[in-house]
Figure 1 (cartoon, rainbow, N blue to C red):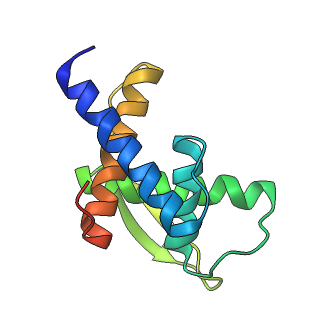
Figure 2 (figure 1 turned 180 degrees about the vertical axis):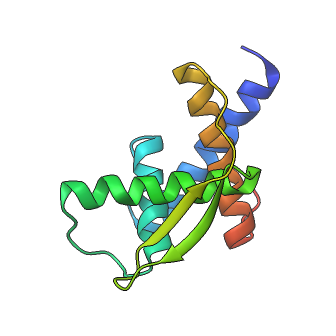
Length: 119
């Protein structure tokens, strides 16, 4: 494993522990963190979401974090408060492991930029 991969995993573990302290439960994986970001970006607090809404929340989170690299931009927020994003540039074709790394890096950047958390 490369040093940068080890650094990423250390930072990721630190984020998960920080989220555990903040919300009282450690997210199981990247999807759990993306769901939390989606709920935060929706801004309506925690509540029961349908399966489709949970998928939409994860999409919101992915668009938000990838917007830092210019892949997406916020288009509008609908009448119910749900953000809608436009794909601005094509995402590179990565294998699943590389996709996960890209998302983790952007999730870390999200918490650093949005909450001034040094990870």
